Length: 488
Image (cartoon, rainbow, N blue to C red; front, side, top):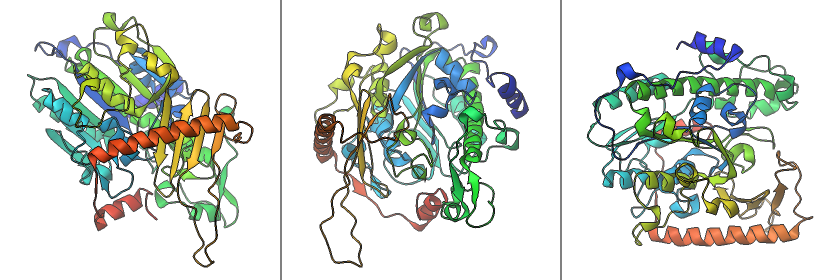
């Protein structure tokens, strides 16, 4: 499928590659007794911009096809609003406080096995193909992979070609675990020309009045800057330009994903493969005064898509295909779910290792519906990137707490400074988190604060079993992070 075809389809229909069977290319090797597993992660992907989760613009038609064959989890929360701690949670089933990877210098401790290590120990052949500077660093994410390709500056088509090469050279006598991390949704928002203006002009119903002045724009990290604005002091660049460019990026990433899925299909692998798609974190577009990610825990930063397409024939999937789950889920649920599907009981891991925090979601399609634990679960997130924040969401309520030390002005004598009060939002009536209702509901604040404190205490106990390492960043890594907008 050419970009021009995808562009035309986006204007008049779904820009989607068929996920139907390709019998002419099916392999004749017998299906594995346990499914292959593909963990597909998109960078910087907000749930509310994914058409597979009901966004009005057709940004992700290939994900729509994936969702139609599987289960969509509408309220999935990332554990952190930036890549390194979030991905480490995907690979460990633990929150950042527990696995200890909370800053650039942190790495996994030796007592914390990764998902890849557990699967390789159970007989899987394992591979990672990921684009992000963090995959180049020695953070422990490489552990357990038989094949590891982690780079910071590789375009999506090259990643897809490398995936094809690995599929054709892998051992075929064992099931495989393949982690794919696609970078394209991240800034800069510059898809190929065929995609760049696919959603221009922006519909009025999806437009915003948020805008940068020239002075504000000058303070934005270079990675995020769209073409130059006008004169100093003027409102020169409205967020609609960014939103359309971001949506175009998602659409292009969806096209790349369709090609990758097709490469599984043409090798006859899809019926034997569990596909888990998730975003690692979201992106802010001035909703709360900031642009980018990493520094806040509002929904635009941590509400990310989760779609699981189980292995099996179309007939076997018919009873759950297209199911939507509205209960809260978390990115810590992915590791126990994958382990359970691979035949490893996540509740029976050695006591010398930290027990996983997440919930096995496989009963959603193997049983009659979502596991009972989801009915009363809370979802937690945190960041220690230029801020120290924790959040807990339970049902309709969400609490954000500043856990850092109050900042003192170095030019003034030390004075007692009050900790910023917690923020409470009722998401059903206030999905944009514009109205703090903490003073009106002190009982809810106390309840959620207690839940958050219990969670942090349990995580610190898990962390004590692991330990973690902190390594200074080399100059090359610092420069790469600065290009991506992570460092001043």
